Image (tube, rainbow over all chains, first blue to last red; front, side):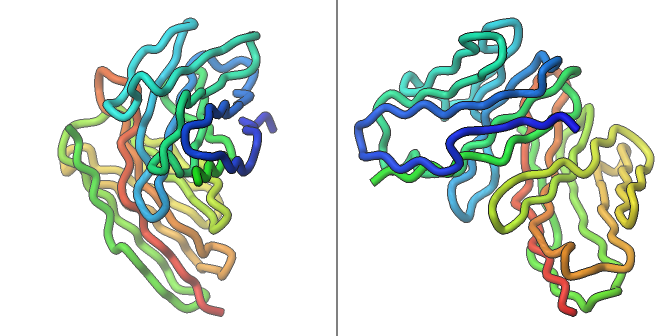
Length: 112
Length: 109
């Protein structure tokens, strides 16, 4: 069964460094999403992406964040200058119809 | 803004018991997801509902659109069902999911 994959599974970085989190959505899907979950809190929407552009973003998704689909298979989330409060689990999701979303296993980002 | 509430927050039960987890939301939606999150953190989609009832194995999900309420039932619960169960709603007119805080289920052998 096709699945969403994410790399790396765990990333440790120093405050102020740039990180890129990678996702490979299911191949025929058209809508892509990033969510994050700070430890002990609920999952929060960050951004949705369709037709090579951002379709919706939350107030969390400020200028420090960017998304890209560089080659038709990968979907990346870049954080330009990480802060301690960016430490969280980041989930990628994709869907064909913008209804049922399929989630990746997540990347745990630790900022020290 | 849609407020999504789940109850209970924590549930411990004996193996074999029938489990019910509830989710209510404040604003009409186009669809509702039930998700399972294992201790390692990964999220698995269990159901997506927009009306009625769905069944998959020992799991049953129902939704009442008029009452803005959904339930997830687990029959003949098993220790491997221990996980956090999360309700997430898709609002009309936008694409983002709004998540509940989750219900932590522990099934004791």
